[in-house]
Amino acid sequence: MAYYENTLVVKQDLAENEIKNIKDKYNKLINSSSGKVVKIEEWGLLNLANKIKNFKKGFFIHYKFEGNKLTLDEIRKKINIDSSIIRHLTVKYKKLDTKNEFFSKTK
Image 1: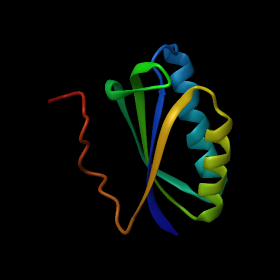
Image 2: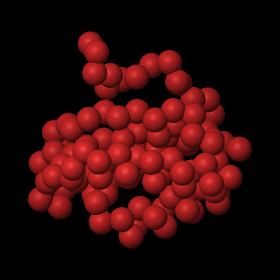
Image 3: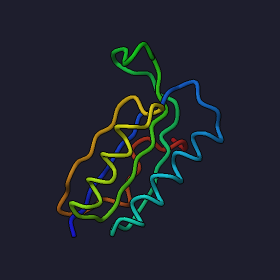
Image 4: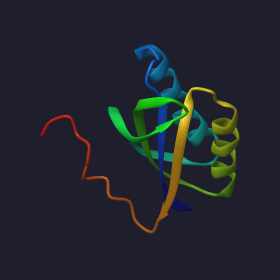
């Protein structure tokens, strides 16, 4: 299995419980499709450098997980049909950094 980081940018106008539902949905999806979530970070509501689909801000959710091709395919399928996600990025790593949290709320 390989290590991955997946960042989701969710619409800014969603309610807090909808964001929690999205976070739980993708956590269950990764765990059920032969993957294992190592860490989930909520970076919060951040300004976007450029407008994406007429949104100036987005709520960022960052997953660090182990997975394989099946896991990535399932994530891509669900993200493509999920209208509340405006952008996403998946990056493959040789080793995950679970100690540092770059957008932590306590600075």
